[in-house]
Image (tube, rainbow, N blue to C red):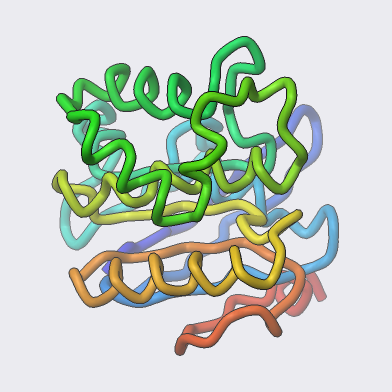
Length: 210
């Protein structure tokens, strides 16, 4: 169980969450829903450790996650809406360098499997600067496949289906289902709930703000 207790989170001078508590069950999918500005991205970035907490604690079971932030970072993959890709590298090079930055020794065969998991293998030599927004999204999501090779237990995904076509959404659903079967936990922020064919819990931040 991921426990968020008495959180206060600010973005600039704005208080986005004040003295707020919730929890997320492990080994399941929670979709974080809400209008623009409701705090979806802020919440994911705070859990990922990219936004400092003004107040409160986050625990994974009984362990405060930020007491060892390096270990917590190794335990998750965070993909935000900007995808985190270098436009000066190819699709393949982006994935390879990203895995190396994590300290993962991933062979060429597994990197190609990761690209195939989102049907982007035919674009592996294409520079990100030449990719459509849909291809960029698939290039970022190919990282998720590497979870199955290493001890990653959490996916934090901010609008992962933006710019995806129908076939890509089907492949993304398959990745999530496999991750859950492997006891992974997914926190996924999005606007639309019509794109998913798996069971999920729902956290509606619009209701929270009322």
